[in-house]
Image (cartoon, rainbow, N blue to C red; front, side, top):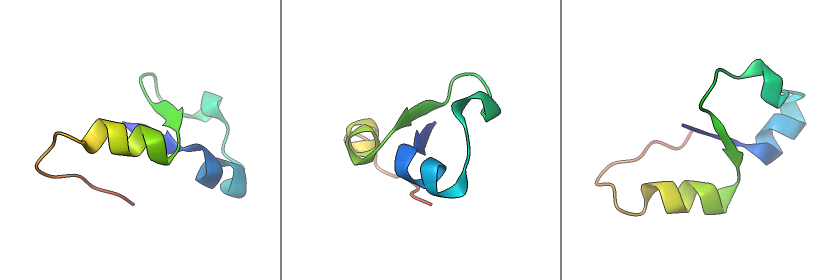
Length: 43
């Protein structure tokens, strides 16, 4: 699971607030993670 760093900044969310295993990134992380999938969810 990935979290958008820009959205985190806007909402005042810190990395420490997430459960273990959440990657912090942006559009490049999202596109790289979903490139080979048949389905993805962007919220």
